Amino acid sequence: MANFVAMHPSANREAHCERRRAYYNRFPAFWATLPGVDVEEYAVYGALEVSREHASALRLATARLYQVMTRLATSLQRAEDQPLLDMGIPRSALPYVHVVVAGMSAVMCGRFEFAFTEQGPKLLEFNAETPTFVVELFQMNGQVCADFALPDPNLQCREQLARAVHASIKAGISWLRPRLWRQASVFFSSYVDSKEERNTTEFYRDLLGPKKRLAYRGSFCGLDQLRVTDDCLLTAEGKRVDVLYKMYPTEHLLLDEAPDGTLVGLALMDLVCKRRLVVINPPTAFVLQNKALMALLWTAHLAKSQLFTQEEHGWIEQYLLPTYLSAQDAQGQPLFAGPYVVKPVYGREGASIAIRNSQEIVEQSPESLYNDQVMVYQQYVSLPQAAIQTEAGLIDVNLVHNCFIAGGQPSAIGIRGSQKLILDDNSYFVPVCHPF
Image (cartoon, rainbow, N blue to C red; front, side, top):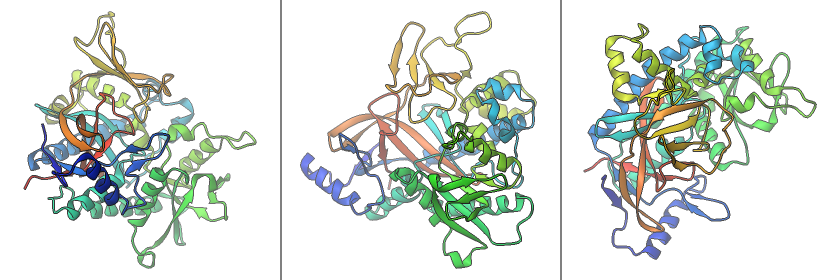
C-alpha cells in the first residue's frame, strides 16, 4: 500500500477536521468540501507518496495510448459511417464527427484513468472531451506540496497546459474560414451555477495570461448566454465567438433545443462543419471520449491490424484490458472467465456502471442515467488500496491513478480514492507527492 503523509500525524480526529477545513478555506474558489444535504469531504488533508518510477510509468502509458488511440479515432473520422454508429455515436452527430481540425491537437487537455497493477498501469477509460480534475492536479496538488514542503510530481505542468491552450486556440483560428482579419474572440463557457465546472473553465481562461500580450481576446460566458445564428455564434451582448472552449459534453449538446423547438445544439455543431466556429476540445475528442474505442482498439490488436506497428501492438497488449461490445462471442460463449465491468460509451461520473460475473452483480452504481446507451464490456481488474486520513478517521480506499495529456504530451498525475469499487464524482481527491 502507498504511504500516506499526514500533515499533522499526532492530531486527534476533531483537530484534524478543524485543520483541514481551515487550510482549504484559504481557497474559496475550490470545492474542497462538496455541498448538499450531507456536507461531504472531497479534498483530503494529506498526500499519498507516488514513486518517480510509478509517475514515469503513468506518463509513458499515457503517451503511448494517446498515440494509438488518436490514430484509430482519426481513421474512423475519415471512414464510413457504420463503424461510428456501431460505437453508439448518434446519427445526427456524424457530420460533426467527420470534421478534423487540421493543425490542432486531437485533445487540448484530456485525462487517462488507470488501475495501477503489479504489471503496471492498465487503462480504465479516457476522459478526452470535457475532463474535470484539472484544477485539482494543475493547481491544488502543487499548492499542497508547496505549503507542506513535499516534492511535487507536477512541477511545470501548469505552464505546459498553458502552452497547450494557446496552441489549440492558434490552430483553431488558422482553421476558420473565411480567414479572420480582425482580432479573434475566444470564449470559455460552462454552466454558471456549477462551481466546479465554472471555476475549471475560468482556470483555462486565466492560463491565457495578460490580455495585452495576446493576439486574441479571451472571456468567460455562461452557456445560457450563447446564441446560434445561421452564420455564427454570438453572446447575448452580440459579440461574435470564433473559438469556443465548452465544458459541456457533445452528447448533451445534440439534444439541446430552444423554446421554439429549434435544435440549437445541432445548429452550433453545423457552424463547426462550415468552419465558422471552432470548438475545444475538437470533434476528434468526442470520438476518443467514446469507450467503445477501447473495444475497437482491442479487436484491431487481436486481428493484428496493420494500422499499428509491432511495437504499438505490444503497447496495446501491455496497457489495455480486454474490452468488447458484448460479453459473449459470436457462438454465445462468455468472453470473460472472471468478473468484468459493464459501462456506457458516453457515461459520466460513475453512473450506469456494473461489476458482474457470469452469475451475479458484484457492485452497481445507484444512478442509471445512461442505460439506453451502447455498452462496453471490460475485464475487471482490482484497484490498489491505501489507508488515508479523513474527517471520518483513517480509512482504506481503492485508488484510481490519473494522468493528463496536454497538447499531445503526458502531464499532471493524481489520484482519486473511494471505499467503493465504482468511483463517482464524490470520490476523494487525494493529493500526491514524491517520496523524499
